[in-house]
Figure 1 (cartoon, rainbow, N blue to C red):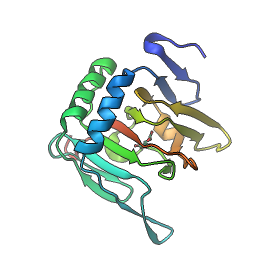
Figure 2: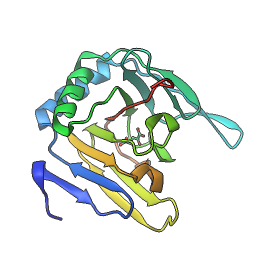
Figure 3: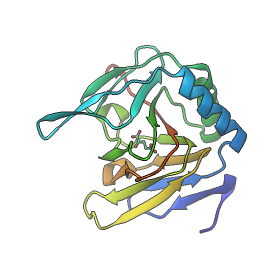
Length: 203
Ligand SMILES: O=C(O)CCC(=O)C(=O)O
């Protein structure tokens, strides 16, 4: 595949727009951020109700953002915690790079290969009609898989390396789902930050 501007590649997908840049951060920057975030972020584990049963979600989560932002996620309403220093710096770099403004970030910490995230789309009403989701990965490489909502045989997969940036734009969330599957035997953690713009109910 041919890499374009900023080492990025466009993933060819009908009715979706996904761009992958494996060199958004330098290796030493991503290592530093991973270590700092592991310590400075207040991680929590939330439950999820599936088929009438309550389970703990297989990963740790944090939600940071501008004052007053909240986000309904997997049945829980998350109130944004204030931006921590490293996350705020990363937001600034991302906004300069993408020329998009983000007012919040969902942060997932996969402690090892048995942590995962199931099939979903980031299509909550409060993200608007065609949300821009900017996903920065730190730590061990994990695979993100995409499948088309109307035709689940239509799939894509991308290895998300440390320091990479995956931009999902256009109608990606409307027509595609994504997941981070479990990876048996994988040791080593990964932190993923998905920056978003959450619309307030009065904006
Ligand atoms: O960990 C990832 O790369 C994906 C995160 C994700 O799907 C989300 O935050 O909605």
